[in-house]
Image (cartoon, rainbow, N blue to C red; front, side, top):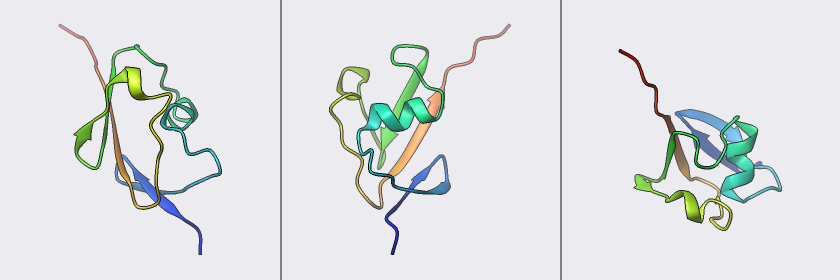
Length: 69
């Protein structure tokens, strides 16, 4: 059975890369670029992205800040 996570509500296979930063990079997110991330409802500070591990069953929300007028 493949380990999965949910990213913004969509199920995704958990690859061998288990660092949050690597996962975010796969989704086009760059550290410190107008984005917030929560795992299982808890915000993860950007300083922790390189060391935070993603585990099977985690629910990850990637929130991009959009400006406008």
